[in-house]
Amino acid sequence: MSVTCAYEQDGARGVLLVSGRIDSATAPEFQAGTFDALDTEPAGGLVVDFTDVAYISSAGLRVLLMAAKRQKKAGRPFAVCGLSENARKVFEMGGFHKIVPLFDTRADAP
Image (cartoon, rainbow, N blue to C red; front, side, top):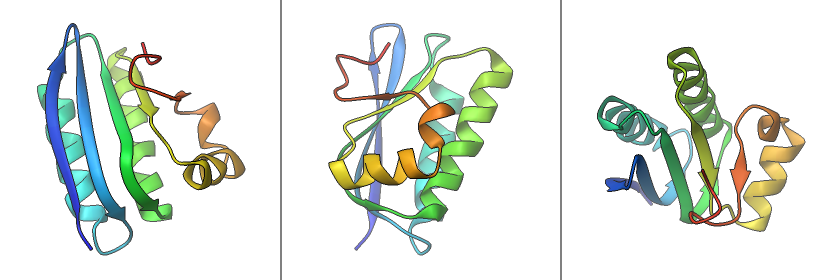
């Protein structure tokens, strides 16, 4: 299975719509899509929407950590929304929810 990333503008923020499975094989595609979105996104920040993501491994979490650090350094918001229950547990067990704000839906994210 692969991963796809599609960027769209939503008001003052960018949204990265991710779908598929993020594992060690697809993490490079996810990283390229994420960093392309960061290069495109406006000052309003970026929300990564995982509504259509079936699975995320530690390789995918590493990409998100790098993106969150980059956004923090630039003083821009960064958030994740739409995580499945299992993916949210992985984020919380790994402490990522303390680094990357998690929201249930895109509308909830800043």
